[in-house]
Image 1 (tube, rainbow, N blue to C red):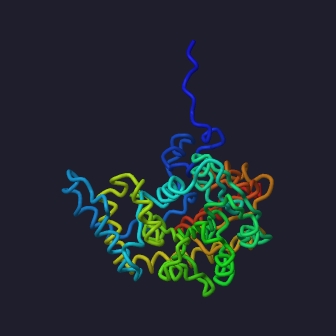
Image 2: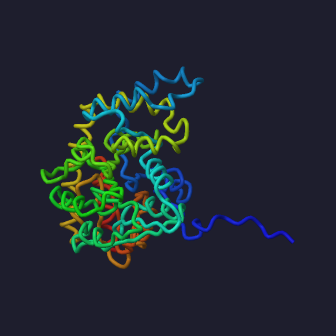
Image 3: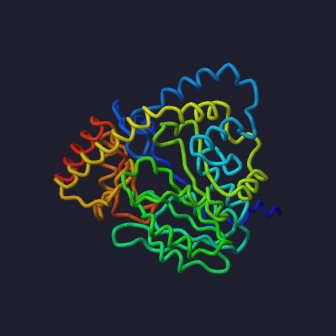
Length: 367
């Protein structure tokens, strides 16, 4: 009698990551022609024009394997951020680098510390390596409590993740708090400062995290992405900065061609597209202000956002409201999976998309 195939026990506790619902799925499911997606924090202005042109120019070369060492791409990042190339890693999205860090540094029974209600890929890759996730509560303002995270570190802790700005809350931790936290964390623990949304932040108190890497601090890893401000979510490019010893460790386990040729070309060109970055940041800032003003008018509370999304408290009927929006062609992110069942996360869109969301939400709440 066959005993069947048994999965490794780290997978037993994993709930697969569920991304935002695609527009085409909603159109088919509800018979709609006009659907807007405000669920995945994508750039509403589209793709960096310089990146798009570079990808078109690279198309005839797709018969060749890409550069497995990503030499030109890593060189461009090093030059752009004034850092040594030995301190630069790139991946197939930022989550690829989170997986590589997990594979390189976690073993059975190790511990990872993260704030409650943060990016779920930390949980998934920690569990896959059969390590234990330790979660600390948010502050009363939906922020990350760095003191609680530092208190949770034990001799078994290998990695701590500080998502700054935090997804899905949009809140930030300030430079002085981050500096105090880093001083408390043992040098044997890797501190991942996940800054996927850092370009969107409009605060003088946001930390200069690259200063730790430039200073050759061995246990700080700064993680960023091209998905948001450059509009390259569909091509998957993440990058990180760390001590050369950490980067060389990741090189031992990364897939040989983890960043494809189009992505490398796009990333190099996007770094030169400062006009598109400025336009994206300005559009986001204006849209965020408009949405916050309209949410105030509707009497809804929300977390203070430093990103291209807003976490909105709807109440016990949040899932019902989310489904009602879906039926009317407005896709937003439910937050039950983030342990925030009374909230919806809404990406900031174009002026027309923002207006449609507010109008539709107002009608649903009024009914």
